[in-house]
Length: 374
Image 1 (cartoon, one colour):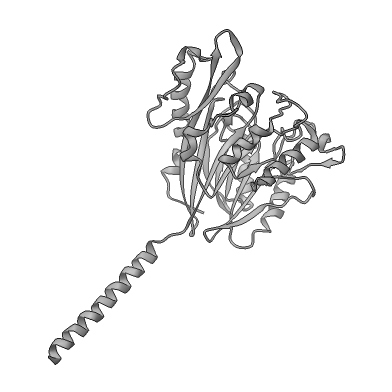
Image 2 (cartoon, one colour):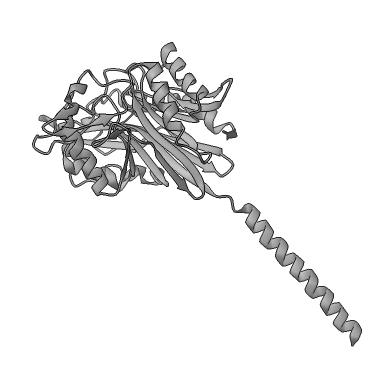
């Protein structure tokens, strides 16, 4: 009987050890992470605004626009006293702006179209964003001292801020009718670097430092030497990841191994939503870039190319069209609406989709093929 009790005791102790081992394994496997999603430029045009009315245009992209932070470069403002207006001085509608709150929770308001409708419109736009509990970076309506967003997601500290090197020469509109709009606008590289270095000093908890930067020439997929120099200098000065905007076409990515620091440069994500099409290649090609950031700062990148097109509702009226945007998956053939003959660029789209898919994979596969730690 004593021997039997002794055997039971041994079995009980072994079971305890096994239980502890299982608990330890589960704890080891539980790796916390934060997911950040970035897209390019959201622009406006009266016909695009109209085509968004009462429609969920981004429905086909909803699975790719999910994360703790989902970011877009908001390249228009809203003056509710005016109708939607096209280039060169964009104005959206309040309903158009509100639509994007369904998918995005962080917007950059530092770009060359921020002053299009003046300080009052920017103030109205920012107020609407904040009223809906969304966040902005890159601008302020009450202080020249624009602070970055420093947050903690699942125990992962993250620094986010936005800057522009361009303003279309209309920054005089930053003070109108008692309204003010201050923006992180630094046309000179030296001033930009100094401002960013000052902002980085606020990151005191080993944050992953990510900036949105509006820079580079428009409509060309190849970064200029000056643009490359600016981006690399920012990495050398402590920035971890640069998300580029302004060219309105996609540009390449780079894993830059600097002398002082290592970082990732996305030279441009291209247009996300725009009326641009056909004038230059790849204006209708965008990128949804996802980052899964782990506690050890290991980053897993994923990307999804996107494509937008216009369809005439009525062949007799070329001012009334539908706007669609689709993901370009492994098979570059996109299932478009049945009105294929109503493409504005009917002979253009098939090649554009295939070429765009190839381009985006060429530009960003280096991020997904590497195990990146910063």
